[in-house]
Length: 236
Image 1 (tube, rainbow, N blue to C red):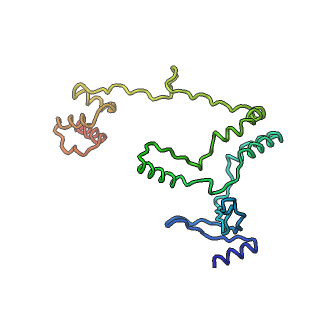
Image 2: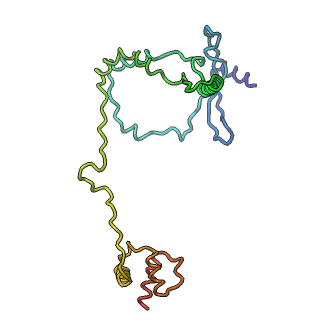
């Protein structure tokens, strides 16, 4: 049945839309099954492209939207000479893709760990063929760098970040707290409570004062509750 669907889609040059769930408990994705024919074989006997369906993910209506940040940006003007230069650069770093040129990094890491244990090799180096060969790219593009600097200019240098605590301008920084002012006696504590200067008074100090006054049932009170109880004792 699946083969018949593939052949009919290939014959009529059409695609099949369906919902794809790649894993359990994962939301389904709208995809298009695009039929493709097998291409010629390479010298190693492997097909450049196998026959079957190619899965193409299709966006939903909510995924298609305009981004304000892109609409506000002014598109720079590009000359024909600049376009030709980048065409040359792309042509130099372009290569024909084939799956046999890239090894699975996870499998290679597993094989290297096994070889290290068997042959007692330390610090075995893993070569990840999926990463770009930057040295090779630089070598290929080196003849075009002078033209690129001439047409586009040098890369702008980032301004050095301003260090905090430089100079005497520290207006926006929080100031260090001063020493806590504690009452010298009960009279001074009572005066601070009446004047509302209770920032430096801790819960322990307030409870100690009330216990001296013989007030009970203050173990569960908050700081504001203790202050109200002290004021209540004075009104009595």
